[in-house]
Length: 341
Image (tube, rainbow, N blue to C red; front, top):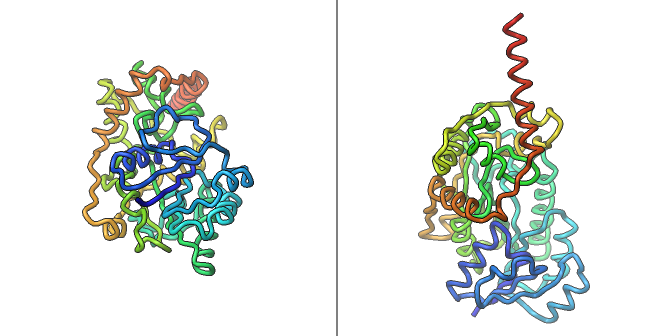
C-alpha cells in the first residue's frame, strides 16, 4: 500500500480528500497537524501531532519515514516551502503543493483560464506569496529533481461555510442572516461577472487522481468545477435554498475597498470581481474519466442545511451588518442629493 503524508489535512479542501482516501483504502494516510479536528477524522487515518513550523520537532517526529506522496495544504510563504524542502528532500516520490488560482494574471488578459495563463497579481499579497512559492518549487524541480506537483484551487467550499463574495471577518453567516431577515445584501459590481464554485468532494476526485501520478511530476494543474455562473446566479441559488427573496444592492469593488472598514482589494479586485472561466482540459488528460458532478445549487443547498442545523456554524457579525447598512444608507443619500441638484 502506498503511503501519503498531508501537512494539514483537516481544512475545507483537505478534509474531503482525507475522507475519500480513507474510504478507498488504497493509501496509508498520515496527517501532520495539531489535532484540532481529530474527532471528525475517518477510521484508519493516522495522526502525527505537532506544529510543522517547529522544524526540529517535526524532523524528530517523522524520523526515517519515507512517503510516496507528501502534500502541504498550509504553505503560504516561501520560508515554509524552504522548510518543507529540507524535511522531505529525498524522502518522497511526489511533493504536492496547494497554490491558488488567484495567482493568475489580474486584471485578466483572457477570461478563459488555463495552466498557461500568466501568474501576476499586484492587488493581493497572498497571491504574490503563492507565486513566489511556485517559483521556488519549480527551481528545485529543474535544478535538483525535487518531484513537485503544483495544484491551483479556486473558490472551493464545504458543508460548514456558504461561499460568498463580500462578507465580514467572521465568515459568511451574517450575509445569510441578512437574507433571512429580508435585508439587501452587498453584491460587488452588478452581479454579472462570471465565477466558479467548486464543492470540495469534486476537488478531492481530481486531487486523488494526481496523487502518485508520474505524469504529474513537474506540472501545474488547476482543479475546479466545470460550471460557470454569474454572481447573481450564485446569490439567487443561495436565496432559493433559504426560500427567501434575493435583494442585491450593487456596489463597485473599488468602493467597497475604499469604504475603509474591510480590505476587499485582494479578495475582490485581485480575485472575485474578475470574469473567469476555467478550462480543465489538462487535468482531465491526466485523470481520465474525471467528472465534476456537484452543481452549485445542489451543493449550496446541502451546505445551508448543515449550517442552519449546527449552531457552531452560525457566527454572527453585528459589526459587519451595521457596516452594510451604513454603506447602503450613504449611497442612497448620495443618490438623493444628486437628484435634488
